Image (tube, rainbow, N blue to C red; front, top):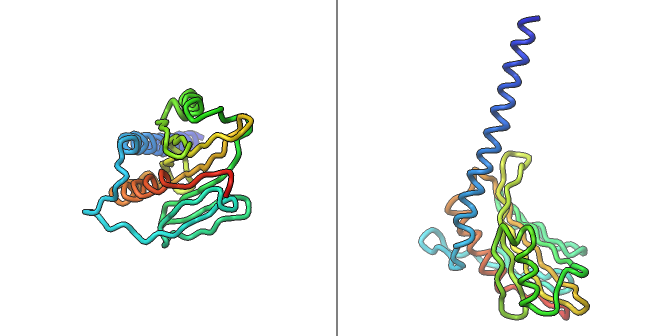
Length: 201
């Protein structure tokens, strides 16, 4: 009986240590990701590697148009979703309409997003072409360990207070964050800022 109790205690301690390690690893990776993400340059780090060839993706019959590296697998679905894979990382892009989630103009939309929970944790910026960019970072518990997800949302106001939104989520294993991931984030940020988002394709 005593041996069983000791074994149970040891197993419990091991499980606790693993859970705590995964949580701390995720939190550490998240802190590093945030530090670089909110000040990241949109220019590729040429000293590290050349920018890869790109391909154009259309979602929602052309209402959202952007570019991703040509080597990334994945094609748009009829539901307006793209899921692309780049080695151990993955990119998910979704086009949706937020009913009642917009505002009469870009300035009011930007103010509303700054008050949202992601907006309070991230950065909101008005872009040319009646668009607003919201960017933030979150930590997730992936199937293979802690993950860091870089998030961009491009909003444009529609009539009646609705909004058209392109949501980009780039998910990276926490252990894999580094120079190559930073290059991918820079490239994605540049292309997302140049993405076309319109209700009239």
